[in-house]
Image 1 (cartoon, rainbow, N blue to C red):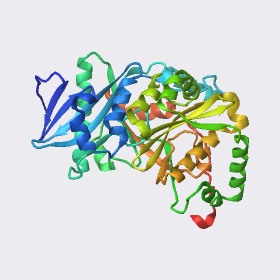
Image 2: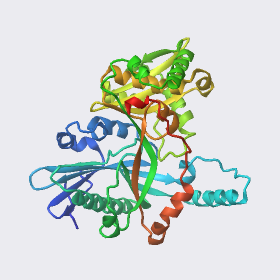
Image 3: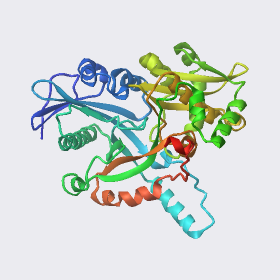
Image 4: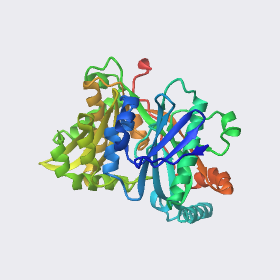
Length: 410
């Protein structure tokens, strides 16, 4: 590998590797034309409008890096990175009061000891704010082994660059994939430094071609789930659902953020927390690809959910609500049902529900899909201990997979 200084001030650094050259940028805007010409709408989460929205609403202690992979003729790939200050004690949210058993108390004490001492910068290949493989795109003629070598090469390169800028980068993180990206042989030989982990599953709901209305969806449910849906709908029947305009979102920005934080602060794990202007900036940049729906009771906003349209699929994005009204009105369940209805009406192919509240999402028809990610610590001993540390720190959600659809439809 050879690093070559550049005279172009817009490029942070350049790396030559085999027949490729890599340009490192800290803003999507400086090479948006090249980037978008290559991405060509294949993934909204790697599009210039979305990435520029993240830049305009950057959380504290986070920065971004973009890599253009080129040969002598054209762009061959793009990769997206986030540099995040990671404090395990702040990111992990679990009960630290211990349990009645001595073994439980010992485990919690060890977990708390470790969490409070994990404080450094993490270089993420991918997006900490969303679930899924929104990591890189290459031309199809570049084989997977070469792609992974490029990812590995770029991670080491950007890590060293960030360290030279004064960041204490100790962890490399590649996320998220629905199947392993390294074979066992790869990780034992070419990429032995990466530890593979399974995260909580991503919940995905395919929509049936036979569903032309919400009633079609209802008719495919087992009777007890139909009763449950009707009960939830009745409890929320007086609640007005309102599509919020860009102006509405901007005017209610603080309230939306407060509702979001109410839910986010109770999540088992948050690698990053959104900036307070995130929803208004995202609407400004994504236009009709991003929707925010408000729930109103007597003209008072009590909840909201957001969705992103991505090539015929719907990504269930962030939401929030007043906790006091959720239980009585079953707001969360109604949000899931409203998203399903939106997708049926708009002929979407599937809904990506992310990986929280697994059981209730399963109960409306979402299916669990394994998620894989990869970690590498800069210190050899720490890297070997990562599986043990992860097992101690990982928040675990116990849940039961549901089968809401009638047997004959499987």
